[in-house]
Length: 415
Image 1: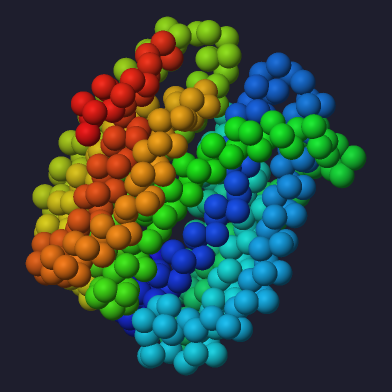
Image 2: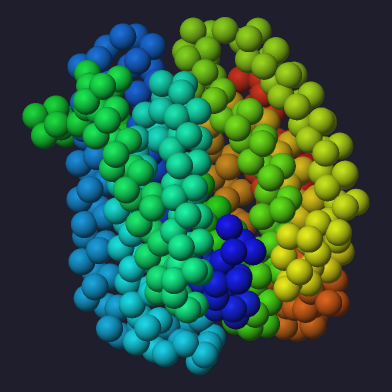
């Protein structure tokens, strides 16, 4: 996808697209944690075979999220004529009207896909994460095919690119939802009659805590492209994105292995099966060690691979080193954060998340502007270094034992 896309639009346009996608991604906080709240509540209802309650959870979540996204869309279309996207994206190489259309299409598809992706929470609650992987794979294959056709039939267009990358997952998610809610999940398919206001409080209670954690993650990680675009220009975003995608394979593999255990932890904790939880964590640590070795191998061949994969993009070695460290530290934290999220014990994540949210952007600009470390060529990836520290601190302190406390001394030791 990356080399094909860069071949279709130029380096700067690709950087603009990445930055715009990050900006739109900020609006994912309008989920208010409902997806994760549904995942935990639905997992418990399914384990108890209470299909009526499960159906009510699903219907209520779709109703709440649909209402929220509807309000967001209306507000966006009211204020978007007042937004100067050329200033936000720090570019004049693309016509302002075209850039506005790109922003509208990107945001609209994002909102529609956002609602439809609730079915992924159902997959996870049912401990069927492979379904999510399968439909994501289909979406990516369709997107790739459309972009390939565009390269053969049209000249480079950021608008066509945004339509292709937004429409493909929308079509796949609609087909998946219709097929599964009339088949495997027919007993819990959403319906207006099953919406229950009593469950709103339950879903919002747990969901709001997840929302704060999600919001802090969005601000910390989704602002990177914007900071780079503003401080260094859109043409510098692709180097960062390429390194992130390359080493992100480690994160993707570990996510494939670990995320199915979220709902399994929910069920095991409800049944007080602590021995299984401990044994599972030990196995995940072994997986992490294997991926650590793989990431070091990837680092050793990274320069050659970049040259083969995207010869147009120069990725400095220091940036690769930082990304390699990042994915491994996050992977280690995720061993334990999957359990923490599964049982809903996320108070310490809230504390670290809020603190990180407050200081991340100012600190990133401070390193970039005042220290003169904004250029990859001068060995700078401090925004990610700080992200590593905050993520590691937030996720690793609580460990995997439900009997452990969240003491201040543990936090100070990690810091």
